[in-house]
Length: 106
Image 1: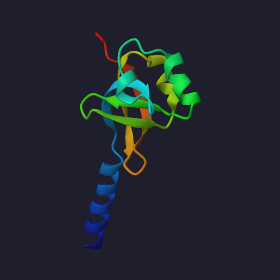
Image 2 (image 1 turned 60 degrees about the horizontal axis):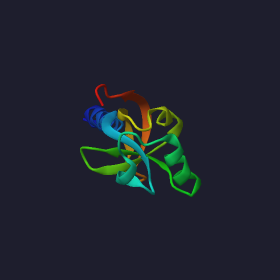
Image 3 (image 1 turned 90 degrees about the horizontal axis):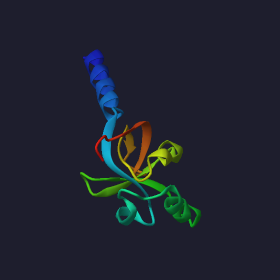
Image 4 (image 1 turned 90 degrees about the vertical axis):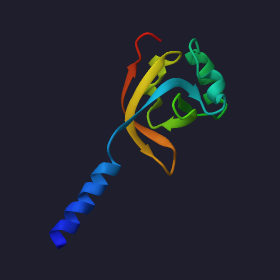
């Protein structure tokens, strides 16, 4: 019985850490959805970041902004629709980014 309980607990932990994905636009926490669109430039986002904002991914499905643990991974995709794969920390609302890819046709 103890082995079964341990196996179930391990399975639960593994499922909580499983990667998920979000599709949307690079923006910042100050401008949010307003700058989450095609044509947004790195300079626009960096201007807000210099003022205290943080890099974000604006998810189209949830219509919500998420912080990212490594903004350098998003920077080259600013102004493009992207898919981010990673793990969300629900306490901080920050995605631990594992992969970023451009969504073709956007």
